[in-house]
Amino acid sequence: FRKYKDKRLKMQNKFVYLECNSENTKMINRLDFREATQLIGMFPAVAILGPRQVGKTTLAKMLAGGRPSIYLDLEAVADRAMLKNAAEFLLQQRGKLVILDEIQRMPHLFQELRGVIDANRDAGFKAGQFLLLGSASMDLLQQSSESLAGRIAYTELTPILIPEYPEEINRLW
Image (cartoon, rainbow, N blue to C red; front, side):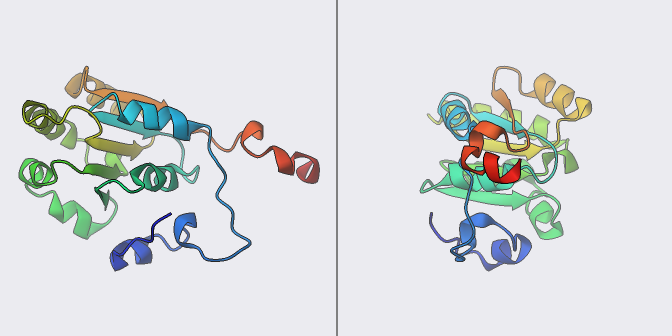
């Protein structure tokens, strides 16, 4: 995995597995990685929903991989400020995978995303524009499905499942 050069990202995410050099730290291969990769290749926007601390951010950074991308944590004031004129900022990111973490903090963005996705489609960018991370609240699902109908796919990231970590089964139980 590549190292992230953005110091702000390192400071905000002290426990991101991708940046840990310890030999004792291991990233568990999530079953959702393959599904999310396929969805990113098919839809302009993909939402990964799930409870806190299940690995949504880590999975998103893995999905970004070597592709051009930008990560915004919407719990961070500085990142929210970048979206003051959201449509203009997001259009400037054309050709990158824009990861919006904690999207439920700015639900009004769904209306902006619709216009940006359509403008990007007109410019030839069909799939893999946005990766949205957040909780699976009913309000979030309703707002995104109404604003982004036909433009978004959803996947849920659950807590770790036994098939994802089979070598530890005997040790844990």
